[in-house]
Length: 228
Image 1 (cartoon, rainbow, N blue to C red):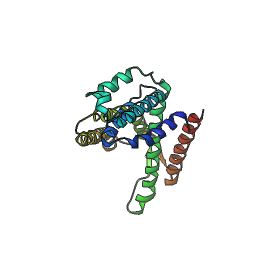
Image 2 (cartoon, rainbow, N blue to C red):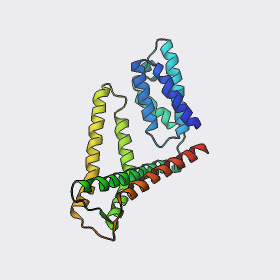
Image 3 (cartoon, helix red, strand yellow):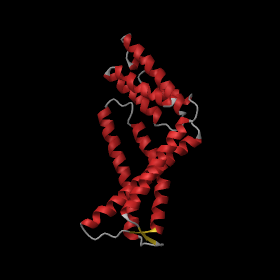
Image 4 (tube, helix red, strand yellow):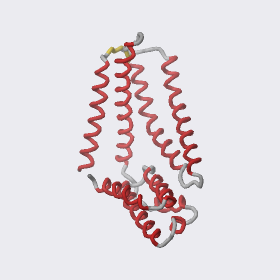
């Protein structure tokens, strides 16, 4: 386990001691920091631990999060973030690459499951056109950074609100709407663009094996990178 992972684990344990109201404010800080890919992860986790320790001490003295962070905790969080070091570009690229290949592995496994099950009930064309598959892969690859940015943005916009339940509901609705918008180009492509390029017909288990191996390789690489 890396130092950063130890901090996260300790954080998860210690913040359970906070009162319900203070815990809500602190978890807003936590999400606000962790959804900002610009800042260095380890330094952010160290600062979050310092904030938690100060808040736990304040509770013993009968103080609240408002006494520590003022009436505008979001502005306080922004001020802290401004002084944190920036994360390296390779880490940001690693996050995007991990999301892309995880999505690709998921698609392959789902495709394999569909190819194995659907023919049991009705005629199902199992051939794929290389040209169409390549276009879809490019679309997914380019849209994932935007998707990460949008989802994190929705989360950040929902934090530090007086009515958290209402804010969470709006976040879910906006996320769902974005998902629908993201899906529309794929639907139009499948519906109106004819197949082009060489065609392949693969057994269902090949998709599942390749997807599973891709996911396993990602896990191994991430584990190796964290152990360095």
